[in-house]
Length: 429
Image 1 (cartoon, rainbow, N blue to C red):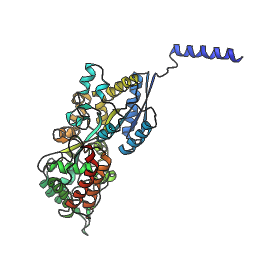
Image 2 (spheres, rainbow, N blue to C red):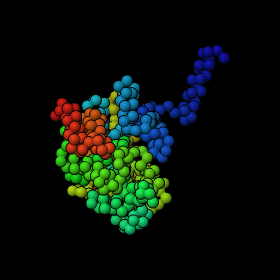
Image 3 (cartoon, rainbow, N blue to C red):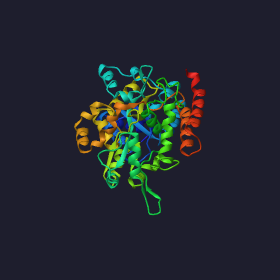
Image 4 (cartoon, one colour):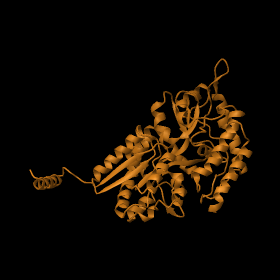
């Protein structure tokens, strides 16, 4: 067969295949960066949802690029965007909002939605989650992988200590008094079970926000250009964290690792832990004992920061790509899919409509702990976020570590953190 005839034959064969539906070329290909390690339940769920979306929308293909934690994902994603690679959307930290706006790489969703139904969808998320999703009256992030910090506790340990397993501590005073009863020592006086553990690596600023809020203070203003690290109520909150280890002796001194704390709790090394609700499903699946989940205890008030990731859409997208991204994000945040994601991971479903689905109603009836994080929205505030967030929160993280390790007083450490943050943020005021 000569080259000309062969070309005609191949073209005809391709037309036949297309006509029969055997070949389907995607009209739109999209890349999404996502902050989870490859493997595990979240990875499986995301890939499953992407598969469902592509089956319903054969003209759109979604390539998910996974990069582990939020910081690594942001770095890799922005490097790709700045290099001119086509990245249409990402799930990135909700606290990245000011930095992404300052970098001029994301669009407000008001420029993407087209219909009244789209605009109604945009207003359908929990207000507490929108605090880290909006700036200057515009919506830049769509809540998806979101959380609050909750208290997990070992009900069997409560019973052993003579405490009511249905009444976890509701105040700081109760936290200390119950924590003392829950500490367990061996014959040699060595602690085999702590009363409480709060992780101080990974996201120390986030865990500390809980204590500051509960003591009546938010750490930053809404425009992200001012922080209140050395306010007396904030100093007192850090003093309390220090005292729980050094004075009340209900928790270990020094650092408590974020990544291994869940296993310590499951292994019985601590009776209570503060951690993300994103751990709810792994705790449920791994606990060999009766456990409970509660809102965080109050001092002047209850409170937890929200946390987690939002969908962002990038500016270097065509109108056709924007329409495809909108269709995909609406699919992912639909009530049923939000319910599937919440059940499979422990993260909060981000809309009231999700909790009205039979899927989530039945799950909550069987496992009431699933709504604790959602119910805490009533007391929740925005996670710590400013301009140049990474640099600013580094000052706070270092202050927390120096106090918990016994190398500085809360006042000294937070004064120094305030000075460092002010040097950065002054230019944004």
